[in-house]
Length: 273
Image (cartoon, rainbow, N blue to C red; front, side, top):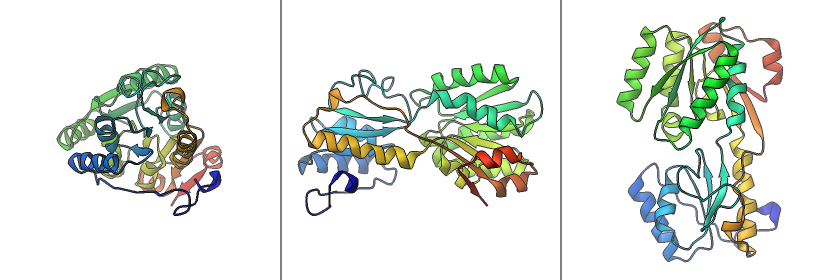
């Protein structure tokens, strides 16, 4: 916002709230913001659904990990309609590349487990893209839908017994919350792990390849600026990620006995020790 000429306390007031994963708290926060007559609500994650339910006519700028059309948040990416717009981080064109990178440290024709929340809008599309890419790479995919910790534990136990050689966690709210548990399982069983956001690699996954969320969130400021200057959310297309980030956890590689190709290390935007 500073880059667009805004200075907090001079020509903009930013009222930051944190729901800490509580739906009730998120509902209360959004209702309170609407009562205070804010001009725009910027939100992501679980709080987004609260904003959709309670924002009314207040414009909502969102950062969303799934498919906002499938979720019913907007009419289409090109013409959102209503009072919502923003960015979707569901970058299907990066799915195959992520598997290709992971394949560089796997044996020929590996068995790879997909862990994902089946209720996450866009998950089925991402899975189909993964299946198509895996077929071309000679990979066999196992699919493990997980909605809660109990299902995740059952899935991990099944992987320990079925010859899984790597794990890919689709980046969604549930796997993000459970990323350390998945990473710990990978370390224990010496399995390479991969996902789409850098937070996964920072928490022990072998690698993350996908949207640079910091850049994407910064990009949301452009939406806010346009709305404050009179633009309607309905006329502002929902955009896809503006930049890609490749992060490798070299400490994890060492712990599970994976030798990383030098070419892979040179391509990484960042490494984690």
